[in-house]
Image 1 (cartoon, rainbow, N blue to C red):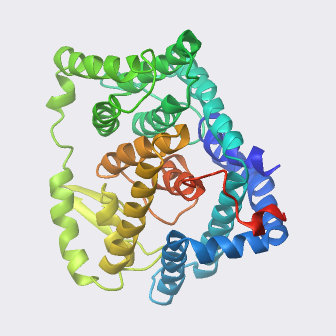
Image 2 (image 1 turned 180 degrees about the vertical axis):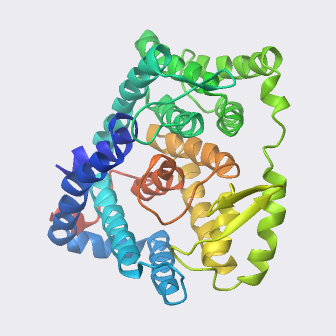
Amino acid sequence: MLGVGVLWSIAGVMLTPSMKFYFQMVALFVYLPSLWFCIARRDELGHLLRAHKEMGILLALFGWAVLSLLWSSSGKPLGQLKSVSLFMLFVFGWVLWARADERRLRLSMLSLALVVGAYSVAALLFAPVYGGGRVNGFGGFLDNPNAAAYSIAFVTVMCVPLLPRRGWRQLPWVLLLLVSLVYVALCGSRGALLALMVTAIFSLSLVPGRIAKLLPLLLLVGGVTLVVVEPGLLARGDAQRFELLRSAWPQIQQHFWLGVGLGSDYTVTSGRSVYENGAHNFPVHTAIQYGVPALGAFLLLWGIIGYQAWRCRSRALGLSVMLLWVFSSVAMQFDVFSLWERTRAMWLMPWVVILLGLSLERWPQVRPAVMESN
C-alpha cells in the first residue's frame, strides 16, 4: 500500500484533478501506511537514525523548523506543526519502503516515464496556450508553464539512467522521454531549460548505452536551436531575479540567526511588483525563513547526498540521484522552492532527491541483521 503512496506522491503531481484530491490520496496511501511502517519496523528505523548522519541533520532541520514556531508570525502554529510532522512521517515511511528493495524502487521510478510521456502527449494536444506562445500545463498542480516544465523535466532526468541497458530495448523509452523534453521546451521555462542543459553536459560521460546518450545530445542541440529560433526567451531578461535578491538581502541581515520562522509571511519587491513568501531562490528563501545557520545545515545535508550519489554512480539508481542532484542544484536558484511545506509541484526539488539519496546504499547486498529480522 505504501508503494502506491510512493508512486502517487510523484505521479499524482501530474495526474491529480485537484489539490484536494491529491492530499486525500496522500493521507490514505502515504501517511497511514508510513505510520504503520514506522511502528512495525521501529528497530530498522532506529538503526537508520543511528547509522546515517544525514538523518541526524534532517532531524535537526525538522526540530529547528518546529522550534521556529515560537517566534513565527504564523496565525496557525498548530496547523504548521501538524503539517511538518506529517511530512517527517512521510519521509520515514518513504525511506523505509525504498531501502527494503532497491530493484523494486528502481522499477517504480522507471514506471513514471509512462506517466510523464502520457502527460506530455496530452498537454501538447489539449493544454491551452499560456501566453507569449508558451504551452501550459493542466489540472491540479501544473496550472502554469514553470511548474509543469520543472516537474516533467525532473522526472525525465530521473528516468534516463534507469532505462533498460540492452540496445534497442531503450528506443521506445527514449522516444517517450523525448516527447517530454519537447513539451518542456515549449513551456518556455528558462530555469528548467538551463538545468536540463547543465545536466545533459554532465551526463554525457556517465549515462550508459549509445541510444540513451541520444537524449542529452538531442537536448543540447535542441536547446541551442530553441535559443536561436525563439529570441523571445532571452528577450524576457532576468525576470527581475537580481532585484529580488537585492530586496531579500536586508531581510537576511535582519533575521540572520533565527529567520522569520516556519509559516511566517515576508515580502520582496522588484520595481513596482511585490512578491509574497517567494524570493525565487531556494537558498535565499531558506535563509530568510529559518536563518543562515539552518541554510548551512541544509547545504551540508545536500552535499552529503550528492557525495553519496557520486559514490554510487556505477549503479542505475545512484546515477539517477546524481543527475537529479545536478538538475535540482541549478533549478532551485530560479523559482519558488522551499524546505518545509505541503507537497506540491515544486516539492520534487529538493525532497525527492533527498528521499532517493537516503535510500541509497553503496553495497545494497549487505544488509544489517536488524533489517533481515523484519
